[in-house]
Image (cartoon, rainbow over all chains, first blue to last red; front, side, top):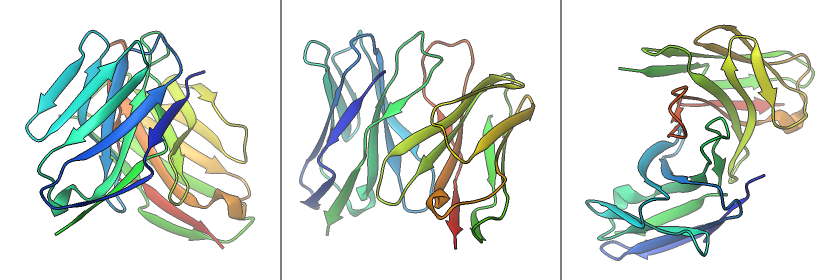
Length: 113
Length: 114
């Protein structure tokens, strides 16, 4: 089955700096890669996703890149703000797998004002 | 619009007691439904998923079971809780027959077994 590794497990940045979180996956058939943000005591919420026919996607201050050859994808947050502090999860799934997402272990991002 | 409701938000139960967590989805039909568990400081572990009424698959053998008595209702149960069952339980849904797409999560239930 699919295995998703996520690094780093914790990340501390100064407000205004950029943050990068990286994930690798094992199943070359995976073709959907969402990123979730989880605030304390709440359920995860989708912030951006990318499909394997796209190499990069951007939405305001967040962007995701995908390298299918190397089987890794990354989340980039620019101009970080204190409200970006949360746990971020990457995930992967493939089309014929019943829409089941395999999640990475999560990254706790702390943005210091 | 679609909404997912999960309750209770918090629960403290003694070891050996039964468990029932309920999740309902509104605004959609025939959703895929999922139960995840998140241990403290850890990632999301898929426990059960369901593609239809009474069609449930277990991903991890354990002390828990799931049922789907109605199309948009998903229940997580245990006959006798263990200390190791403590964690944050999340219900999620995704649209059926749309290939792979995002899952929408409920707000979670924090279960503490004492």
